[in-house]
Image (cartoon, rainbow, N blue to C red):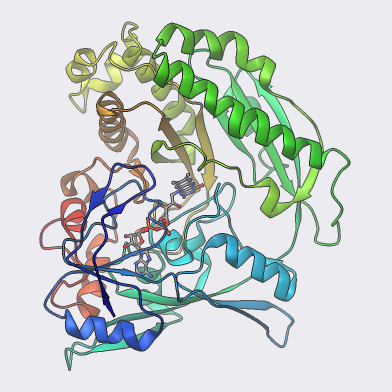
Length: 476
Ligand SMILES: Cc1cc2nc3c(=O)[nH]c(=O)nc-3n(C[C@H](O)[C@H](O)[C@H](O)COP(=O)(O)OP(=O)(O)OC[C@H]3O[C@@H](n4cnc5c(N)ncnc54)[C@H](O)[C@@H]3O)c2cc1C
């Protein structure tokens, strides 16, 4: 049913548009009708609108699949649980249903649970220590075009290059209708928090804590790690302090820390107070418990969506993470007004970006911990760890300050310089300042991906202005 077209805004408030046609189909057959009706137009799907990039923008047709949100779990002969999930199902609803129907869970989880499953896989959403969620998709059903007839049709891919392309496709392989994946048994995680002076101390215990993530604290330049190890499925009980820890995390981190950052960086707008806070106050706010055991879907997530913010996340190969961490610290220091160090000056000579950095000196005081998460190499064509021979680290930069022009300068500088120096890839669903000229060299499988898209979308119906900007005009 063609409904009056609403104005669409994303979570970050940085993307706002009004499509010509807006549909919220209740059945797959309606999706096929929409595709046939607009076979000469442009079609995008919106999930939960939690991407900061322009990935959802469409001037023509926008489809909301939130009503296709069923979850069905079945067991195979070996007892493995397989879930078939409707594309518009939120991660939270999927978690609840997987637990209720078969006491199982998702194979990977990011920091929040508000995204839809199709939106999450379409940009390579990830947590720490595992592959992105995209990698685990065993079958993907999409509505796209049959090249022989030009009519809309349903394709189900459970192997081969089409599956690898559809696992993370930014909407370019068609409208995802449902996904199927093998569930993980419900499990608990043991978490210990530690504070460190060097990255090496954290990386040296990664073997014992494969799901760990860590934070570089701006201005103090110390590190905190959430050391996390999954426990065997039979170990189901929470530790005595798990409830207390969750309450602490909600009050002191999700609310307290974020309110303080908003206050100092955005409302009072004082760089000196931001520096003072990280150097002298934060260490007193961080509880460093050891051996907190809780269910994975409680320990891995936080209420990060409580305060509106904007993020860029940049992936570097694991073998370059130490270098990248020093680089990030040096660049942020210059943006905060310090002199360019000799090492940084030398590094920026080859991409020819030294003058640009110097012209930006003192324009932005970074005000949020920089998160590092390890993501294993994905069996996909274009997710951020696709075609990799080693794990990657996703390094995230967040701002709570608006307007965001100074942060955008920082984000563009980091994305371009790190692409040139480390072959770094920005997250498709987060702020994405790179153009096709930069992206082309970062993804060796891009040409194959474009060709596979053409096979189900010869007229470029699923090709948007964003896709053209980041993958090139004649792409897909
Ligand atoms: C507070 C917050 C925390 C976050 N934490 C993490 C994190 O921990 N890890 C991480 O990796 N990312 C994280 N993200 C980013 C987020 O997971 C991704 O941007 C994700 O793509 C958003 O999902 P969505 O359902 O909102 O999709 P949308 O943003 O609505 O859409 C994303 C893309 O998917 C396409 N799409 C959606 N549904 C379909 C469909 N059915 N068929 C075809 N294409 C479709 C859209 O067209 C678009 O290209 C976070 C974002 C926010 C706001």
